[in-house]
Structure formats: C-alpha cells, structure tokens
Amino acid sequence: MSNLLDGNRILDQLNLDLGEEDYLEPLTILIKSINKEADLSLQGKIAVEFQIKKHLKVRSQIYKATQESSSDEISKPIFVIGLPRSGTTYLFNLLSLDTDYRSPLFWEMMNPLPIVKEKTLQRSLRIFKSETILFVKDRFIPKLDDLHAIKATSPEECLLIKVFALRSILYYYMANTPSYLEYLHECDKTVSYLWHQRFLKVLEMSNKPNRWLLKDPSHLGNLKEILSIYPDACFIQIHRDPKETVPSICSLTSQVRKGFSSSLNKKELGKKTLDFWGKSKEKNDNQRKSLSNKQIIDVFYEDFIADPFKVVEDIYSNFELVIKEETEDSMKSFINRNKRSREKHIYSLEDYGLDQKEVHNRLQ
Image 1 (spheres, rainbow, N blue to C red):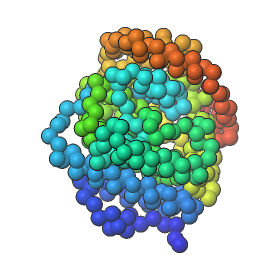
Image 2 (image 1 turned 90 degrees about the vertical axis):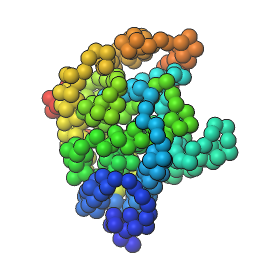
Image 3 (image 1 turned 180 degrees about the vertical axis):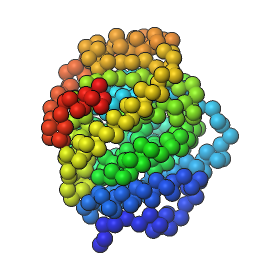
Image 4 (image 1 turned 135 degrees about the horizontal axis):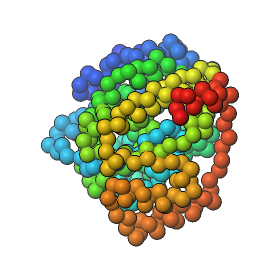
C-alpha cells in the first residue's frame, strides 16, 4: 500500500460542499509537502489522511450551518498569545474558570454539529467519540500528555479550529512539512479567522457567552488579521525566555512525530522551528504598534509563576473587568493545586542544533 496521499481522491471520496474554494491551495501544498518531505510511516499516512478528511467533513457542516444562520454578531473575544510553551496553557486554564468566559472544548472542535443540548444522551455520545479519538492518540503518541494534556471536555487551542481552513501548524507538528510551514507564514491568514468566526457562530447557536476566551501560540503575528474579523478583540501576550520555550516546542513536536514518521531530523526541526517563530514574533512586534494599552497587555512568565493571581488582577484591571468572588475562589484553588502538581521538564537547545545566542538574537 502506497504511503502517498492523493488530494483529488480525498475530495472525491468526501463529495461535500466545502464552501469557498479557499481550501484548494493549502490542501495542494500540504499534500505535496507530506508526500515529498514527511517520510510518514504507514500508520502515519492513515492518521494524517484521517485528520484531513475529518477536518473537511466538519468544515462542510460549519459552512452549511452558518449559511442558514442570519446572526453575524460574535461575543467579544480575548486572545491569549505568546510563544508555545511560554505559560499560555496555564494562564488560559486559569482564566477559563471565570464563568463569564467560554472557550471551545476539545469535543466541540471534533464534533460540533448537529447542535446538542447539555445533559443529553447525544452530548454524552459526542464526548465519548472524542474520548475515543484521544484513546487512539495515546496509542500513537503515548508521552504527549506529559507535555500537553488533553481531555475531551477541556478547552483547547485554536490550531484545532484553523484546520477547517487547512491553515494550521497542527499539520507541521504531525509531519515534517517545511514547504507547508513556509506557506503558513506567507499565506493570507484572514481566511483562517473567517472560518474561526464561523466555528464560533456555530457554538453560539447553543450557548452564547459574555466573552470568548481563546488561545493559540500561532495567533502570534496575526493581530491584524484577527482584528479584521474581530474588531473588538483584545490580547494578553505572555513572554518567557526563548531559550526555555524553543527546545520545549521542539520536544513536543518530536513526541508527536514519533507516532507518525519513520525518521526525525532534530537539527532540521530546530532550524525550521526557530525560523518560523522568529518570523512570527517579528511580524507581531510590528503589528502591535498600532494597538492601544486597552487592547493588549503584556505578562511576564516569571511574574506569572511567582504570583499568578496578581497577574490575573492586572489583566482584569487593564480590560476594566470585574473578578467575581466565586471566580476568585476557583482561581486560587486552581493555583494551589497547580503548585503541588507542577513538574519541571528539562530540554536542551543543543539537541536541536541551536545555541542560546542564536535563539536570543531571533526571539529575545
């Protein structure tokens, strides 16, 4: 059985209305990059093809649902941004304890439609299907939860939403696709956020929040594109020494790829990772110059780890929000639990052919 993917065959098999043809270019580039550069194992080929088909099926459902809806208004979103492995997940999970926020859950990203109500058998079955996906994921990538734990009912990153536009760094994490990664940097990201907004519209059909809380490191460098779709968006940017984040990104990517690829070139991975995030940060630094202090706040990792709730108070004050008493209690309890459970992972830049000076020159 050939390990090559065939985009036309995938589309013919699905035979779905995918809306605008903005998926054709990224699909073509992604599949060409996978076939020429990824060196997928047979199980990797099966897994990647399954993912692409799954994303296109959900895209078709989203397109149909939003074409039938007359609502254009989306609740105000707050985006947590920053380099991967810089504390964005911890901050995101902490802020999500505020019931005024809503974040897309993993099961909703996997199976959002048709809409199901809370406390129903249909919802339980939808969650079970997503748990099955995670069970299979654990067979492919058994150590991933040590680096990034995922549960069916937990909020997840927007990279699992951007797949509906086929413009997501998720595919690069799964397989060595440097040509596709270069395309991701150069392409128009506005399309990603159009589909991102459509997905949120679908979720709002059953539960419209006061505010959306969203997170994905690959939002970095896309502030202009985000604001073109969400003009009232605001941002929390967390900063951490890149000598800590870059090898951690590489380690995470390595763990994911071990489940799908026949080989792994760590030095190439290090070079491509540094280059992508270096370009993203440079673009982000230029874009944020036009934002006011009321649109964006900076958080520093060391301050956040030292006193998480103080940082949360600063965020709420900056955006003129109020922390309810029950939210404060939930957050402080979460912080205390996290103190007891947090483990330190050690990564080496040298493992990926990088050194501290080089990394600081690009990202500090």
